[in-house]
Image (cartoon, rainbow, N blue to C red):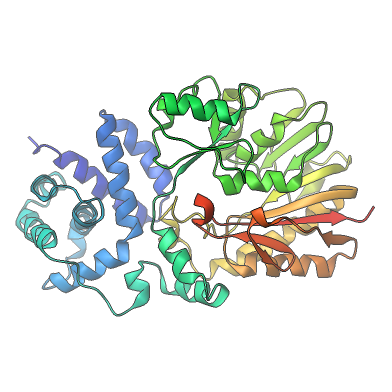
Amino acid sequence: MSAPGSALRATAARVLGTVLGEGRSLKAVLARALPEVPDSRDRALLEAICFDALRHRRRYDYALSQWLARPLAQRDQAVHWLLLAGLAQVKGLGLAPHAAVSATAEAARDLGRTGLVGLVNALLRRASREPLPESDDPAIRCSHPDWLVQRLRRDWPEQADAILAANNQPAPLWLRANPRQGSASALAAALQEAGMPADCPDSVPGAVRLETPVPVDRLPGWDHGAMGVQDGAAQLAVLALEPHPGERFLDACAAPGGKAAQLAEHLGEGELLALDVDARRLDKVRDLLRRLRLEAPNVQVRVADAAQSEDWWDGRPFDAILLDAPCSATGIIRRQPDIKWHRRETDIPALAATQSQLLDALWPLLRPGGRLVYATCSVLREENEVQVAGFLARHADARAAVLPDRFGHACDAGRQRLPGEDGMDGFFYARLEKAG
C-alpha cells in the first residue's frame, strides 16, 4: 500500500513528465489528472506543485545538477520529475519538510523506482536544510529559456527584470460579471459575503478581481452564469473595440470564448459571428455562451479559418472586427508556465507571418469607417508594434486610433500592457480604422 500522500506526488511527477517530456499543455494534462483526485485540497496541492515546478524548473534543475554525483539514467527520468515536484514543495510552497519529504520519497515506489527512494529522501532533506545552489547565469536564476531572456532585454531593457519576475508569480483570478444577471459591484459583494475578498478595478468596467484564486465551482452564481473567468487585460481588448448595440461584429479567433461572450453582452439587434479554426476549442465557446445564457439567433459560432474568407464570408461587411491573433503567448506565462519550455525562438517568424496573413485577409471585410482591433497576449515587439507598422505601410486606407493610457505603454501605433501591471496579463492592442 502507498504511503499517505505518495500517490499524489507520483501523479505530480507524471504530469510534469507529460508536460516537459512529451511537450503537452499543462492545462490539458491537468484537466485529465485533477478529476481523478477525489479530495479538493489534494487537487489544489497537485496544481500548486506542478505550477511551481514549471515556474522554477531551471533553478531546480541547476540545483539537482550540483547535488547529484552523476545525472540520473534515462530510465529513471520519472524520478527527476519527482525531484522537481519535491523541490517545489520544500522551496516554492514552503510545505512542512517532515510530511513533504517522506511522501515524495515514497512516491518513487509508486513510479516503479524503489531503489531510488533513499536518494530522493536524501536530496529533499538536504533541500530542506540548505539554500539552493545559485548559478551565475541570469537566465537560470530567473528560470527562463536563454532566448526569451535575451529577447525581453532587447525589447524591454528597462522593464525586463520586472517582466521576468512577474512571470514567476501566481496571478489573481479575474472575472467578468454577466450584466444580464447583475453588476460587477453586486458580484463583488456576493463574493465578499461568501468569504472571498474581491474588488472592482476602475480600469476595467464590468471586471471583478480576487487576489486569492478559488475553484470556479465555489463561486456564488457560477452554475447559473453570473460570471465568466477572463483576465482584465483580455477584457480590455473588447473595450478597445468600443462595441455599440446594433452593429455587426466578427470575432475572428474566438476560442475559448471570453471575448465573444463579452461582445454578445450588449449586442442588441446587432450580429456576432465567432470563428475559430479548432472545432474542439470552439465547443468551449458554445459551452460558455450557453452557461452565460447568451445564446441567441443573432450569435453564430462557426468552425472556419478566418484567413480563408472565401469559405465562410457572406459578402456583408462588418462594422467591427476583433482579431485576437495566434501569438507566442509570452504575456500569459504566469498563468501557463509551460509556455516557457514549449515556445521556441524559431516559432516567432511563423507566428508573425500568420498574423500578417490574418490582418490582410480580414481588412477587406470591414466597412468604410469601420474598426479592427488587433490584439495579442504577447510582449514581443515583432508580433506587436512591428506587425502593426507593417500593416499600416501596406494599407493606405488604414489609420491607427490613439488608445488611452489604461491600455498600457504607448508603443508606436498601439499600447502594451506588461505582465503583472495592475494585476493583469501582458497584452498588446491596436485599433485600426478604415477610411470612410
